[in-house]
Image (cartoon, rainbow, N blue to C red; front, side):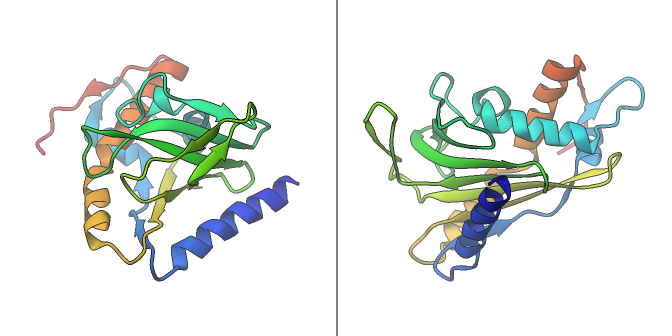
Length: 209
């Protein structure tokens, strides 16, 4: 069953990723330890392993307000159908283009342990177990996210793709998304994970922009 679910999620992501009317963005592969070294000064030789990065992504999938506080409104997260590894997540998230505003986002989430991948597939509506009907906000297009951890145990690489479900390719959305979702949001997640799960505090590295 898990294998079939993984295939279904991957197929849906691929279908939207390749649709001519949608707006896909693929980020360069990210060397996680190089990212940490660029932004922080720590005592000793800290190595963030592949297993740690995967654990971080799984924890973020289930607790986005903890690991992405800059994007998800505190107290807004609700989950449904929480039989692992497939569940529905609803939360208030900042708009990509106007970060001063929030919109309701509904996502079907799948944690693929075999491939070390997490899918977040945006959906327009949800019927909750108590019969309430919820709609995603219309302030921006629905979007699908894919995170995959590759590389070796001592040199993990994080790969990220996002596709916005648009009526036609939107270069403005693509540019804004690439500008807003930058390294700072990722180093924040790594910093929170290391502090909460490993008790490691990363010192700020005084580098120029």
